[in-house]
Image (cartoon, rainbow over all chains, first blue to last red; front, side, top):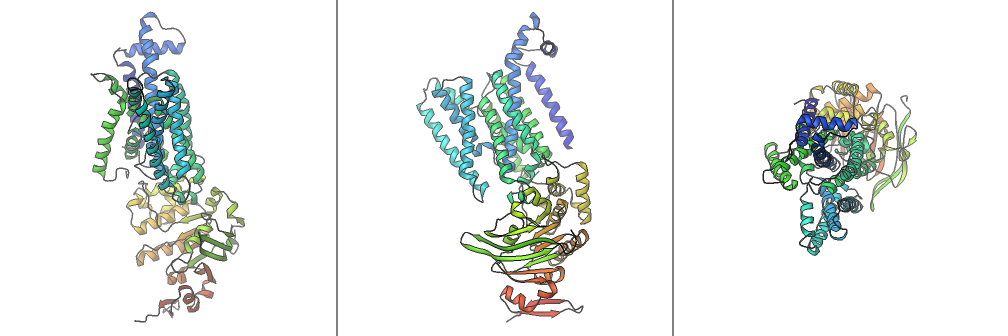
Length: 336
Length: 263
C-alpha cells in the first residue's frame, strides 16, 4: 500500500469509528440526531426538548470518552515509537523505563492516602510516572553505554516501584481501596470527565506537537549516538527532549485512563510494518493508528454483551498474539 | 578554499582512555584538496585520532582546528557542515532504505524537523547516480553486501555536502577487487569535488597508490608524515609496523612493499 493511501485509509476509518462510537451504545443516537445536537451546540443555542437526552448522553458521556480514547491511543503509540527510536530497540516501550510502574504506584498512593477523587489519582499517577523516568535517567543516563544502562536502570526502578505498589496493595483496605487499585491497573475509559480530557489534551497535544516538530532527528538517533553526532545532532539535548515529551504524553494518557497495556508496543510495530521506519511518516501515522486502535477497542469493550470489561484485558488479548504472529511470520517484524 | 590552504590541523593532541595513553602529542596539517592516509598497526590510535578530528572525542590536551576554527568551540551542527564521517561499518536496527540513509545525512540542512523536501530527494538520487549505485536506492540498507554498504556510506557522506571527509578503514571488510573499486571512487570524488579526505588504511600499498599525503602512527605517536613520495619508504614502514619490509617496483615504476618472509 502506498503511504498516502495508508494515511487516508486510517484517517477515514478513524472518522467512521468516531461516528459509530458516538451513536452506538445502550442509548442509540441516530446520525441525524447527532448532527442536530452538534449543530445546536456549535450554533450556541440550547437543544430543544427532544434532543435534551441525546445531547446529555453525547456531551457528558460519549464525547469525552471518545476524545480521551483518541488522545490516549495517539499518546501511547507515539510514546512507543519515540522510545523505540531513541533506544534503538524495537522491543522497548515506555513501560521499560518505569512509566507504567511509576503511574501504578502514584495511583495506589492516591487511592489509599488522598481519597479516591479522579484529580488526586490522576495527578499522583502523572507525577510518579514522570518521576520514575527521571530517576531512571539519573541512574542510567550517564556514561558511554547510555542505552544499555538506561534499560537496566528502567528494570531496577520498575522493580522498586512494583514492590512499593505491592506493599500499598497489602496495606490497602480490601473492601474499597484494593479493588479500586486493581481496577485502575486494568485501565478503562468509563467515567472520563471533561476536566480530565482537557488536562490530558493540553499535555498530549503539546507533547505530540513538539515530537512532530523534531521527528526527523529520531531517524539519526535510531542509527546510534556517534552517527547522530557526526550528522549534527546534539544527541544529549535531543534524547532528553524526546524522553521528556514522550514520558509526559504517556504519563498523561496513563494517569487519565489507568494502565492500558500493549498499545505502545503493538501499534508502533504495525505502523512500522505499514509505512516503514522513517520517523517523518512513522510518528504521525502511529498517532492516527493508535487513536484508531484504542477507540475501536474501547468501543468493542463498551458494547460487549455481558457488560463492559477493563480495556487492558482486551488490548493484551489482541496485542500479545498479534506480536507473536508478526514475529513468527516475518522473523524480524520491525525490519519492515 | 584553495588547494594548499590549511583544511585540518592537529596540534599536540594527547588522548587517554583512563590511564592508557592512546595519542601522544600528535601534530600534523592536511591541506585543502589532499587525500591523506593514516597508517599504523592495530592499536596505534588511528580510529581515536579520527574521532578527535571530528570532535567526537575530546583530547586531554592539544587542539584540532578545521578551516582555521577550533573544533572544540564549534557546535555539532557546524562540525557536521564541515566534516562528514564514513564509519568502518554501520549495523542498524531499523530497516531504512538506501535512499532514506542518504537523505538523513542532509538533516542539518533540513531545518528543525529534519524532513527532506522533493529537491533533496532529487539531490540524493544524483549522488547515488554519481557513484553508480542508483539501483540500490529502494533496497534496504541491512540487506546489502559489505561493498555496497560502503558505497552507500560514502554516498551519504557526499550528500552531507562537507568539504572534509574522514573515512575509518573504508576497505576493511572488502574483497581485493572491491577494495580498489572503493579506493578509486574515494580518489575520484576527492579530486573532482576538491575535497580534503583523510582515511585510515591497513594496507600500505593502497596508501602508496591512492594517497597524496601519509601520516604513520605507532603507539600513539606520529613516526613519519609528509607527502607520499617523501615518506613511503622501507625505513618509515619498518619503524611504523615494527617488522622487516621489502620494497619492490612494478613494471610501471610504482613502489610496493611486502613483508620479508622468514619461512
